[in-house]
Length: 184
Image (cartoon, helix red, strand yellow):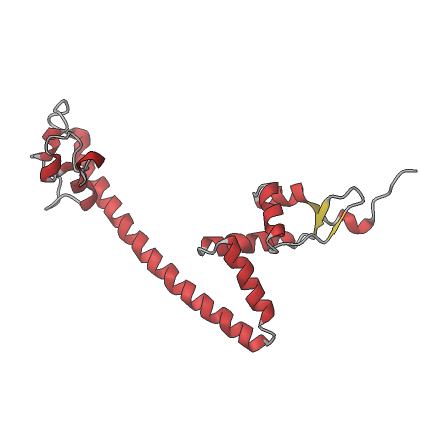
């Protein structure tokens, strides 16, 4: 006798299909299930996990929380707290507080990254002049006292960290880096 597929199963995704649709590995999908973050709708007659198409959204939700800095363990705790709140308004208030805190953290992170971007842009602008160096065969030590006009009053911090040497490394040949052996 040939087994017929149940029509319900046609709309469900096998674990491999879910993994491909979300860019995750099968192992990641299994881990999400083990931690209670994802649940298959059923199993096929052959024992395969079958997920509803909405599971794709759940995996994307997990990705969003991960992007906000939550560990998988913390995500599980969030779900437990949500479902354990018993009162909708209280659960929503806790969620609102969490979102507000994460929004503040995200904005602070964005400001930090904007400062890093500025440092990188300044460093790149400074280094453009180095493409047309008047003494291209000079040793790296020659860059320390470079006389070329880079169009800036001072070296950007990222560049200065390479071309300035603390007293302890003047003979180490490692620019502004301190050798592990020199740390006391």
